Length: 300
Image (tube, rainbow, N blue to C red):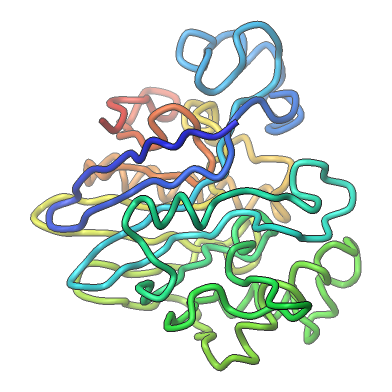
């Protein structure tokens, strides 16, 4: 399922567009966030159903999406989804997928040649897929004029220097070779660590745990703030219960500490929290609550 409508809003002078590659019920909710059992999802059903948990079943509802930021004359993409024609054995949703993501991007007024910066918050398969295109049997950058900002720690972990994540998941080699290595070969990769300022409004910061190099992108403009948190959050249940990490987090304990730190700052600064995979409105303001955080107001 996809939604061809384009959601847009402003963060000060920064225009944000949401391009959805796919959305729908994914896996059982308690499998996605195993530290939150079915009783937790049931207790928060009023806040989760139907946009984040299906009404007639137990699967979590998620989205694969890219956020487009227009800032200071630049076009910035935050994460690039799954991509087409990828070998992703073991994941039917990702494997040899064919979709119209680039068409959706162009219909929103974003041509590949106009993209200046691609931000990969981390290097999992569903965040780097449209980094590249198959050009007659060779993978090449999909955005020919863009700089690709890659977390150095993830590039090491998932690349050949780290043994493709130690060989624990064969798919990591496939992902790196079709979606990351071609960007390096083209001379378009920029590795960064700790923090990286894009311009006066946008700055990347390390937020490890989900992966070694997981990052958040902070936006501040006109007195307004947002934080694009990638996979620090897969579901709003993790805002309500921030100690709960997803099944995909490589270091669940570190991810939980990072999540709480990022949410505390977002609550204190009244920043809009923009995760990679939320369905529904896709982004939400949070507030502190006695035992964690509360969902305050969803993006328009």
